[in-house]
Amino acid sequence: MPEPDDDFALDRLIHEPGRLAILTVLTSVAEADFVFLQRTTGLTKGNLSSHLTKLEDADLVRIEKRFVRKKPNTNVTLTEHGAERIARHWAQLDRLKGLAGPGRTA
Image (cartoon, rainbow, N blue to C red):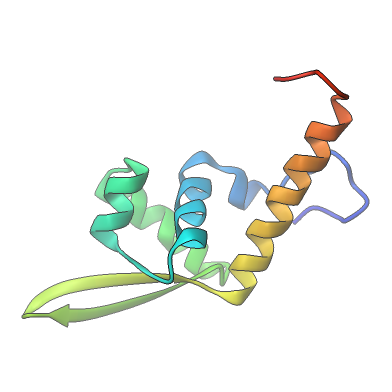
């Protein structure tokens, strides 16, 4: 996790494109099932599962597996810790953008 005074450090766990996509979707909804996340992120089942495991291990998401109408259903929610970390990540990206100066884009 980046230190608050470090203008260049990014949270590498979050900054990975697949995980960033998952967390971005989860900031917009109260909860999401596996199929919805797969469709919105474009990740394969295996990649999505792998990324979700890493995010769950870091306490950024909570995963609940259950059955709905006798079918397995995986439901994912953003934890409070996850919401804080993704907010800090977006703030850090804004700081980095500011370092580029006015009128400069990537």
